[in-house]
Length: 283
Image (cartoon, rainbow, N blue to C red; front, side, top):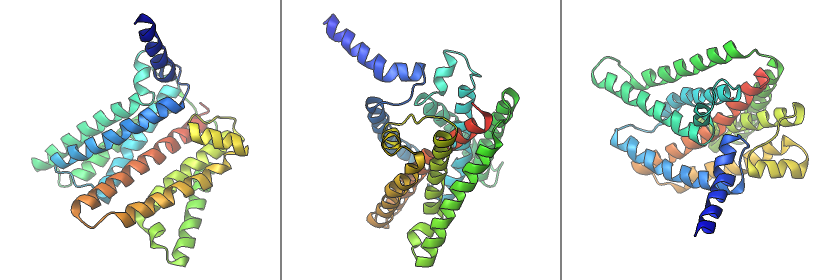
């Protein structure tokens, strides 16, 4: 029994604990686990928002974006060794997602309460402002502890990602492909192409390495992080098509579809922001 227990503890330590303690990245086991947990959390959050009578629409998604930026910048503060153990472990994936969720939920509850008390006229603007203030506070802290040493990396990521995204947008508009020109769908492609650009600049030009299992394998296979561009398009254009074509027009289906798109935006914008800030600060 002790041998069996020891093996279980060794397994947990190797695939879950050590990647957090040493921030060594992902492996196939914890990648699958976090994906399953994410799926379960998605449905849990949907139920929670429904109980809070929060309509998941485009305005809500764009009000969430400052919190994504805040969470990513908080992660960079950990990268900069601002926090010491054991506090720092709260700000490493996947723990940081729960930290950001709790803070975001608290801001959402307060914003809604202020609206119910007629203190604010638009709770979504108040909510977004809270996230923006958090993000700016994190940026101030980062610039206090670190200097911008690679502004060229920041510019290159923003310019290349935006150029690729708007080139695709222009082509889609010329061909009359509304799937791509839809504002929310284009936002998905844009943030993921920004993520691709941050990976390309970081790995091919600045000597960083990829921590995620599948991208790391493909980058090793092709010898370049340029593979991230076709990979992102090959994944997310079909995903967007399925989301827009396979859901019916009921209110519940529309809300679920919009929420899934929000999750996809989070999964693209979060690493793109973290990568870009790290490179700009030389971390």
